[in-house]
Image (cartoon, rainbow, N blue to C red; front, side):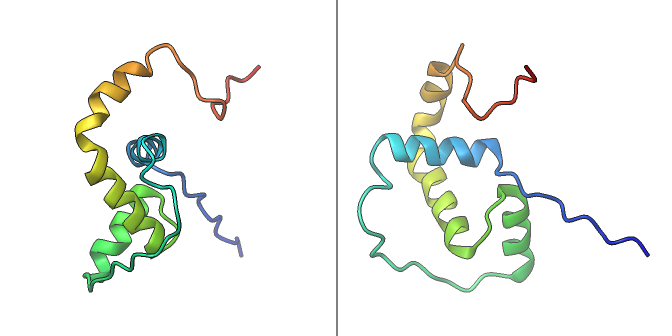
Length: 93
């Protein structure tokens, strides 16, 4: 019997970019002291984790808040990235 291969979760580029912008503008600095919680439908949480690549509820909420907090800055930030390649990109050399 074959063992199913676990698919490695990769963060969605959009959410990774939102976290990057939030980090650059200082929104992720400091102690994590705020508690944000709410009851959500299980299907919504599963789909959001699968789409974003979040590994925990906390990471999912952080991605969602970062996405909302920096949404207006995204177009300018994206244009500023023209001609740059992240160090993580495998160029197959």
